[in-house]
Length: 248
Image (cartoon, rainbow, N blue to C red; front, side, top):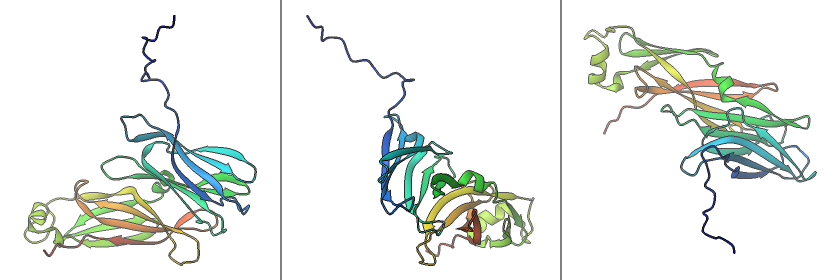
């Protein structure tokens, strides 16, 4: 006689979760004239929005074979993929972006390209953040100086739009600083593919927040346009954007 009263085995905390397809895109990523299927896959506990073990799985239409590539930063929130030509070879590359979940809105981003028949990583935000060095210093007369080391540029931000209460905490009545104050520039918090020249090749617009005395004390953004130079992505142009004064 069969006993049907025994419950099904419970999923334990250390039992691995099954991979799931997060997003699917179609495009010719190797130049064979056929569409490949690109799956972004990961594992996620039912009670958490955090995805782990983020992996690209590529199905090649011509050979009917699969390839799996683990991301360098393989966990994050709201992971997405975008297909587009970033290198100018008329073959689609793969951009993967996910949120880290920190208070600064920092993201993880990585670009994969098929080079000599092999898909490999050609860009990741962690490595690129290490190349982008800045200093932020408050100056007399209600200003802040932002200096970029790569490329070498300096931006002067007018802080008067912050209002008198804000300025009174930092400056004496004659406009001199009460004490030295240093801010900082966050790692990349936005990564947007844009075809500025409308030539079919995408550049990347990368945003980095400028912080003042503390993280919520935002002073603006550094905007870097990144372009592939044949070997790597470099800063083609850089600008600083500030917040406007609310006149209402």
